[in-house]
Image 1: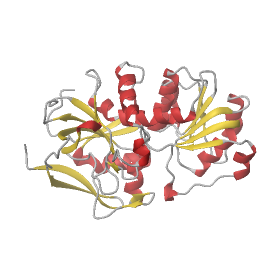
Image 2 (image 1 turned 60 degrees about the horizontal axis):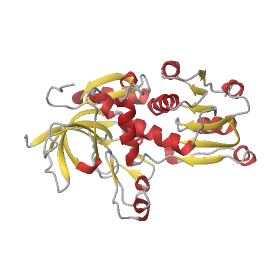
Image 3 (image 1 turned 60 degrees about the vertical axis):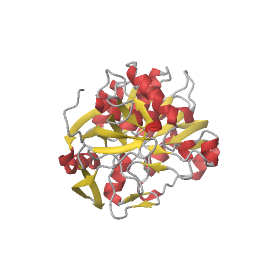
Image 4 (image 1 turned 90 degrees about the horizontal axis):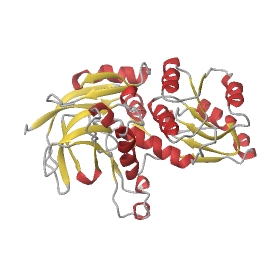
Length: 347
């Protein structure tokens, strides 16, 4: 085992440094992980462009990356490929005790705050936070089990029935896995909207019944409303903008449910109160996922119900992380993957 491992550390807004960091020793309950693939996420973009996310701000430096697959290199499970649950809950606070560990008061999360993430060759992680990757899945798909888990949690919060129309606003990677999971559950019709045509095309390929291009003047609202006669029972908003939130409230039917997954720049959102009030809408905020959601994601992907490889548009080695982040923030593709693996992967 080498004494150090390459890593990409965020040092400031838009500044990534390729460095060598010590390989940590596994603590009790932890195992050594050789990182195979890391998906870059919208929250990584917030850290990169803003130097923080919400009330968490960048200190001396942070290794980003929380969508992680790897192979265990220590203990009885050595050699097993796994997806990492990036959340490490305390398991003792009130939310943890009632099964809401995603709301843990003392949560550690990979690539957030003071907890380094996956953009490095090796890391240690609690064995209890590892889910086996089905043998036939690629390591890139294994990394994307985490966003699929978030999508499943968002759907659970929305509680759509099989015969209810659902609108998904924003067809980035989270929106796309939501579409695919909704289709797998027989929910629909599914209508999507986004400003980027290549993402709309991907949503149709993954099961959306209709894709509507969003515009600066919100002309798409009429099309959305006509596509879901009477409004959508459930709207899942993944874009994180006030315009997207406004569209979500406008297209929801009276008594509908709006699930907010997107994270806004600057940590603030605003909307027309009367629109939500007069419809008596239920607004639900999605906070990451529950541990069982990652297990469910592995089962869905393993059964071929959700094709996660179809999301991957770009792959980069660790030393080209600067370019990977440029593509991420410019939204040029779908899912950008960084492959830190220091040795050839079996898959």
